[in-house]
Image 1 (cartoon, one colour):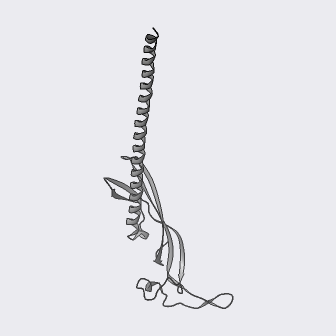
Image 2 (image 1 turned 90 degrees about the vertical axis):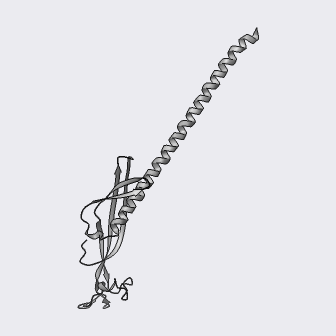
Image 3 (image 1 turned 60 degrees about the vertical axis):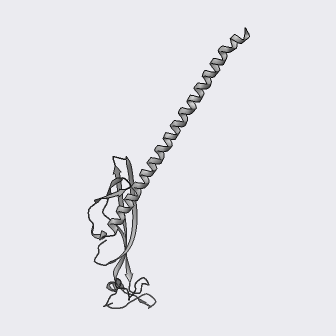
Amino acid sequence: MRMRKQEGVTLIVSLVMLVVLTLLVVSSIRTGTSNTRIAGNMQVKTEATAAAQQAIEEVVSGDFANVTEQQTVPVTMGAVTYPVVVESPVCDNTTPIRNDDPSLNTSNEDDRICFNDDPGQPIFDKDGKPIPPPSKCNQQLWSIKANIDDADTGVRVTQGQGLSQRFYKPTSC
């Protein structure tokens, strides 16, 4: 008689174990799916960031100082083409370059335009030492931003970059 009572308990224990195993399997499947989504989202964000950087580099490689309006640059990364909106560059700072600046090289063709042929009257400091006259060039700091807001992938990225470049003085800042 005791055996008959235990047969029902074995069935109940087996059902409880089956439910626990089912919950473990469902939990592991959900965890795997979540990790796959996270990896996919990170890949899309990384691609979008690289696309924004590439768009900034395309704008900077041209005559970016004269860009006055934002422009949309299509950049293909992998299988997706991102519409990157590059804002017009902003000049943050201008520093005059003096004729004696070591970065200027008289033998460099690009630097020759900077040298002042007519330095004018010499200027002296309070100790009577001559102050080198300014050259015809300025060192300018620019900042450029690129934005991606792609509805297809749901990614939003803003990428900024600073740039220091020498310009002939007529370039406004």
